[in-house]
Length: 150
Image 1: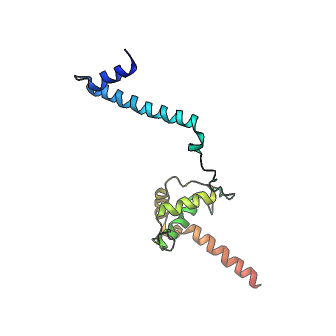
Image 2: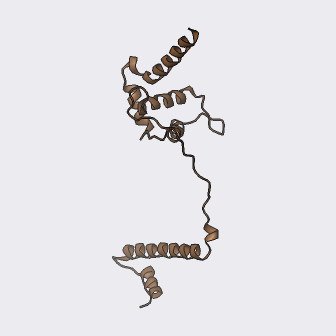
Image 3: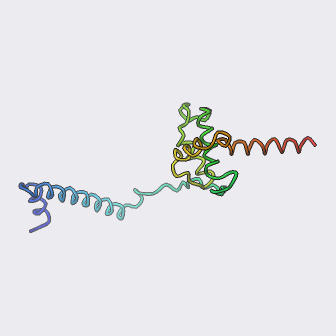
């Protein structure tokens, strides 16, 4: 029995195995289309030319478990920027939390995992510790200012 007559038998079959045979037929159709694409790619590679544009790769990074400025602290900054509604998308609407987080991940070569989990960690802190990273950064600026005035 040839391949095509077998496919015809599958597509017209009935009975208790009809659903399984239809599924097999769909899978074979999918494989046929993939094979066609592979053959086209081999014969005409210029049609499948990948963009040579490189993605952004930052040279900066943070220490994820740093006492003063780790992942949770970076998350705190991202959350503060999101809550400010002063970071915008190209369409002029305020950026979403995950959009801001994605940019920070690319900038500092890190991963929040889920920015929403980091948000929980920030808000689960005790009230006097909730803005720990922002307080740390604020104090650095105040200290530098005092040094400059001496």
